[in-house]
Image: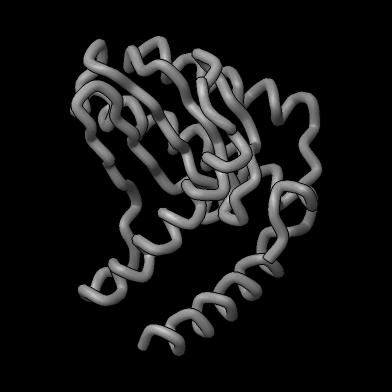
Length: 160
């Protein structure tokens, strides 16, 4: 499974991603948005600088999302398109982008979960378009899907 290291971001791709994330943060009042690939590599960060190790955070986020994919299958769902981790002061919202990247939103009491979810829907749609165009342009679109499906089948066999 190829991750961000094998992607070819153009300057325009990166500007588009940042533009969508900045608009999302402004509209949702969230503190920070990160994009993490499914292998646990940090792709982009917009907003307040996180006060933790972003490399470890990205890796744990990918593992969390992957574990929840397996939990979804166990209860008969194809996937969970989004996850929420709510704390007393800090919360996280995670959403799938183009089946390859995870949008991670960090927010506090200045933002409501409802507003974050509502605004994330539009942001994910915009980001899906950017990533799909990028994957199609660099030729990783269909070949990657086949590879991912094979990996998912293997994981299903382990937990099935």
